[in-house]
Length: 114
Length: 117
Image (tube, rainbow over all chains, first blue to last red; front, side):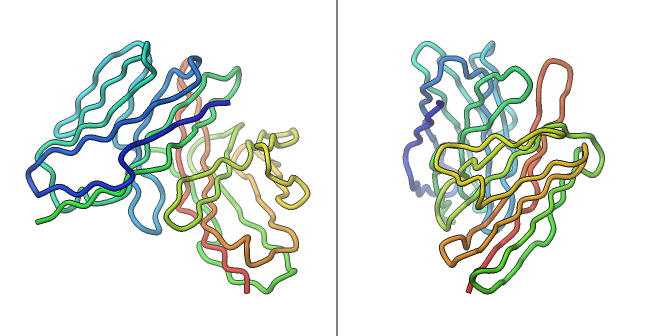
């Protein structure tokens, strides 16, 4: 089955700096890669996603890149703000016949220091 | 946007009792729902895939007789933790899949915090 790894596990940055989180996946059949932000005790919130037919996607301060050949994908947050502090999960979704399981990475705890 | 609810949000029970958690898609039909478990400071671990009108598919290592799943309608899936023990204390989150063209989108419920005494 799919296995998703994520680095780093914790990340501290100064407000205004950039943060980068990297993930790898194992199943070449995965074709959808969402990123989630989770605050303590709350549900994961989808912040950006990318499909396998695209190499890069950007939404304001957030961007995601995908290298299908290497099975790598990364999240980039620019101009970080204290409210960006949370746990971030990457995920990979192997395309199924009738449903798509979302397999999560272990998470990155991001702290933005004011 | 699509809305998924869970009930209850928190539950405390005694060891040996059973607890039922409901997951509802409020504004769309979901033939497939997923159940996750999340321990403190850990990731979401997929427990099982719930399919309307058929048996659930459990991930490796998840006891199907311990975690009973029923997906009786297109908007409701239930997870019953049977004979709960303190090690079952966790945050349980469901998600519902909405089919959109050729793509499937997942929407998460708010989670249920289970504490077994």
